[in-house]
Image (tube, rainbow, N blue to C red; front, side, top):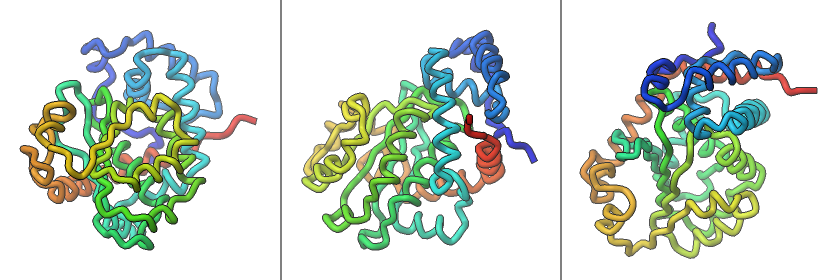
Length: 281
């Protein structure tokens, strides 16, 4: 079975669109040829990193190294992603996560996460992080986005949820998000932000670089969504659950789960690729 994930786009098309060059792809392939501890990568996978790093070749190399190092050292966050396992099904019962079907005019994908079950002891941070990273992997399968916007609705999050935040997984989460993500994080919107989010931020801030901190925009419970649509994300890209023009968040969540289910072979190939990475001695 192949250990090279096959994406649903062609590197040659990305080159034709002017988003990178074949010479950039070849330089990264040449660099990889001197890295025997690295698994084989497809040209399409290389394109993702080139786009994410604005074709800065040195930054691409650093990001690819971080990508494999961090994934291989954290199997609890990046392995066993079959959506139909008992653990992963329960994760989706606790929190709703969805990627919206429409991208922004800047070609950004939009994801959203919120609690479905507000019982604090049912919330476990590790599987929720794994779920979020699985979503990102799945939505890089098609035409590469030029960035990611993530919305977190913290309605229903209480003070006891803070006891479920573990520093180890949080540290790994922020490290991957800031150093290894094969796309650019553009904005993080926090809906229904109250004093609880200030406490979450206080716990998380030691792991956050200023660049990430500056991407966060908070919106209190009384936020006027029309203002949100005008200043941040248009209604045409938002679910009707939040006053937008698209289908409901619940429908989007079901569509997202079905899409991930359809990519079982792709996600398993990604996992086999990670298992082939060997740490340098």
